[in-house]
Image (cartoon, one colour):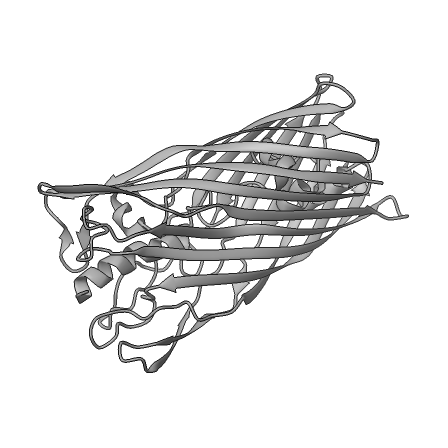
Length: 421
């Protein structure tokens, strides 16, 4: 493949690295965690109803849980992606074969002998992506003279111990470090210079890389009916991702790239003034613009090395409703709306990612078997979203008369258990 076509592929491929939206709702971060929080649309900053969601979005709310508990959850994501393009009379459409992605979640909360002190530990899949588009001679974007095969995969797992302290009966604060392990597989790798023949090396020879940060939270009970919360997740400062690779002649090459996860600020409120009902609303801010890799300019230098993706910071809103039907059965529903950090004109650059889902609808339930054991299930539908633009050649620009559409919808099925003491 000639250099301009490899660059086309590279730009599109690295859109997946940063938008990661084959799996995500707002850039690289999962919008919910565990079946209970997922069934509430991710709303949890002021609504402590399970340990997984509390630690994930506001650790101070673990003080609001009634008992110690351990929660186990597993989500399975099923994305459906279609890429269609045309140039003149040459047009085609191709379905991706990304498969199913597991999303594990664990939450542990311990009420100590001191009623003011609560300990917690969360282990969660927090970010990831993956797509698998084959070469398609009938589709201009994926033809051998275009992008060719598009393949990507990444996962980020976070361990978050937290300490929450009740300063007063109605006010709790919390803090804790976050330790993150991430793995990325990229082919081709355009954060390194191009090879002598204009091709790019593969970045699949790698290991898990580690990073860290912290999270803070506050939880305030204003009245028996109204609650408020706020939380801050610092950027996750990852070590430099390094890859063992080779050039076009098979000689060894060492590749590297700096990619962090963004700072997240969350505000939330909850109302339970109606018997057996709970309403929760969260608003979040994701600071991609000031995050390494995301906020860097999307330009190639003279060697063909890509600088970044120049993403915009975005907001999201989550709304959740819960109703206790009986002592054994609780049902929930949720909705999430997310801004898109990638403009519609950048659709082609993000072919390896199905772009941001803007509308997500969720439902779920918990069935209590005993006083200490409950089963949780949830289902989320990510409404179909299409980003449309033109096929673009680096250094040349958009191809006149060309079209490019990247379409995705997705389903997540979640299930798990909550064990209380």
